[in-house]
Length: 199
Image (cartoon, rainbow, N blue to C red; front, side, top):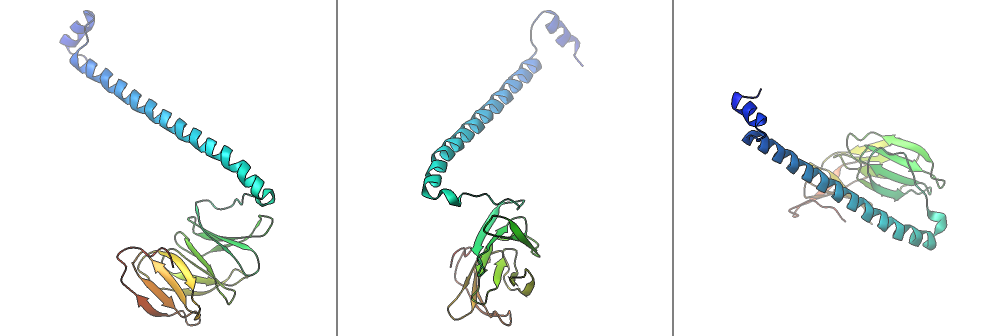
């Protein structure tokens, strides 16, 4: 409610201090909103220009390879070509999808409780996947055949070694070596002071 003095100021056409502050705040908020809109518009324009340049180049390099595989409901974080020629994709939506050469999803592997961020195709034909802590091995029929626990953080990378062991790099700053038959960790390599993201 307006006080008597504020009513008198209004009657005389003079703004009160509170009214001035309110208008200044509204003007400042409007400027911030307009700046954000301009920044968003500029960012989108930049992305459009990048696409305008990139798309023709990609099309000239290999016009038959352009395809969009849709099905995941969140970011795709890992890709791997399976021994049968199909493509596997791991996503933040906690699933692995298997795609054929026509870009059709032929199978969805569910079992991880969090994001799938690492994939590795093994010499025995199995697919190793991880991201949320355990490493899961899948056969080509889409069934989970082994789950290996040991890391205390997310697993960023998987790699099968020449001796048949599986190496995993984790956000717990370690690399673990795994026996793929028993699923047991045979060695833990420590020394890094931050996440291991490449092997």
